Picture 1 (cartoon, rainbow, N blue to C red):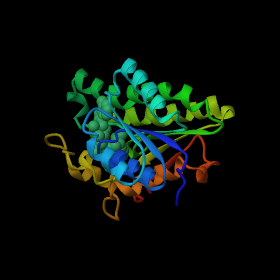
Picture 2: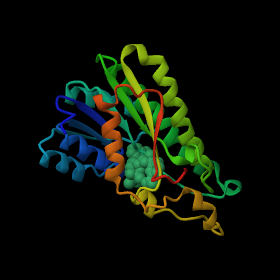
Picture 3: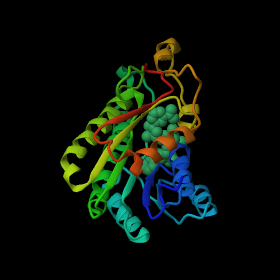
Length: 248
Ligand SMILES: NC(=O)c1ccc[n+]([C@@H]2O[C@H](COP(=O)([O-])OP(=O)(O)OC[C@H]3O[C@@H](n4cnc5c(N)ncnc54)[C@H](O)[C@@H]3O)[C@@H](O)[C@H]2O)c1
């Protein structure tokens, strides 16, 4: 499949994990990419170039709204415009809610919720220059399921889902599609670094676990690649759950 020929894509969280796998998938399908992450983009950059795609890399912390705007503008200039945004950057931290400090709470909200606003807002003027464009934001099963020690994470990802739905209706008449991926159980650093907080009963996590084992990030990259492509032209203002059936 070459669904991304003549398409330019901006991808956040592209240094590793799902963002990296998505950049690779876009390049395999003929697209050019602007890669955004806080650091460490060299490997993904090379992967894309080795596949024959054009890559432009930008180090940016998504919590810095002004820097995000400058970075997305620079990405648009480098690419010669773009019609697809995959916003994937995010963190997971677990705490007993009654013990979480304000700083810990704000770190999760700043990256996952405010970062989503800053990146999407900066991308909109560029996306809307196209007849058709799309945003796909990375949410989580925590947005709709019940996961222990993740109250701030769940709230931040719930915000991603509702923010994305609001975007859809606001810009649908200008050709924009906006959807979220509700992911769960993907084998990345985020997952391997996961630790229950002291005394946390792991049985409480059973409902979040896929019976089919954990997915490689490529399994989610294919969902992004679908949602950003013309194959998904009739899908708008919704979420695709990709969690191996965990929440079913
Ligand atoms: N792995 C899973 O099971 C899972 C499940 C549901 C949702 N998600 C979501 O998927 C997304 C990607 O996670 P992943 O599993 O690939 O983990 P990951 O840790 O491998 O990748 C996350 C990426 O986001 C980047 N990032 C973090 N903070 C940033 C910041 N302030 N500015 C810019 N970039 C920043 C990191 O540097 C990293 O490259 C996250 O939004 C995460 O919440 C993952």
